[in-house]
Image 1: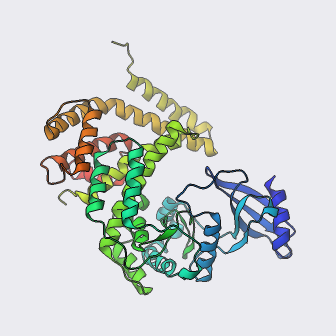
Image 2 (image 1 turned 120 degrees about the horizontal axis):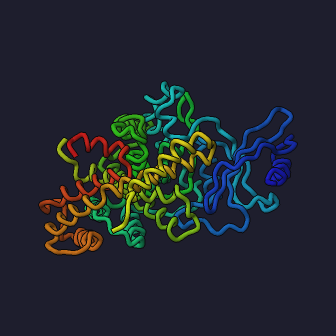
Length: 328
Length: 125
């Protein structure tokens, strides 16, 4: 049982800890798992989260930053005063838990639809678009000399990568072709500044409480690039979960998002943000195609995986709404 | 010619059985999986109901756009290639209308509750 390894691990680095209990797997992907557990302590239990690649699992997918980098980014974010879990321990071989890290558990909600609809969050919702802007500004300002080694990606490189992914699916989609052409024609070129980009900052990857954003999660796709990428991705219609007139995560307007970003002392470029929103819609559409392929050929022959393949058409209508809007 | 009931009727019967008789008996993760299963059968029913008609109209539009004939798959591949080469774009008469109609026909099968689709439908299809 994982609790035995966790108990031995916490006893080594958490002063006073007497063991670990209540371990439960929250999610398990092809290469990564997330567990919740409590550290037993004379002062009362300490809520914790383990994020790890179990021993013997293959290397992370090429786009992933890696768990060591994730831990470092999360800790830097925490130290910068931006909402983030505190990293408590980076796994070492003696832990016998694989590679990864243990972080403080932040209570709150991550399920986007609940955040957008439940009464509990009604008071926080009108403030979230602006708050997201402030949080992103904080992330983009993290000290570059302290960042872990990350891949660097320009818009031009991203377009080529997505085109290659799309062509490898052998899945001719005229709307995706149109989007690829549009992206090439509107490629804004290298950004004036290259910053840390979270890469998957959206409703669903944050812990929200009635008081607002409590933590930013899921640094798996972090890289260096155009900071406007994060603002575009958070606006992708798929992450509005039905609140289609509120581009910023289903919470509010782009203007509120930009105002929060600029109030924190950074500048927005709305044309670049739109470019990355188109890119993001296409990116999610191609990822849906990837799910279809994994269902068809790979180890995950689940119904859920199959049905995500059928969500590519959602991104097609969203791309058309962006690129060829009908008379309003 | 195959006998009846039709695949649409048969699929719908299974979906209704799972939805009405089995759903109340199941909880937790299996209930989630059951909901996905019912959604799949509903999607299949919608596709069996609509595909023939929408594909025929799609082929008609594609023939007019491309001046060529072929299966709906071949013609889509040909259109994708022409857009990739830049021979066809949004200034090409009929392209935007074709892509809109084709996409609306897909959403009608895949996700008729998707908010963007419902919005565009309310504009008159």
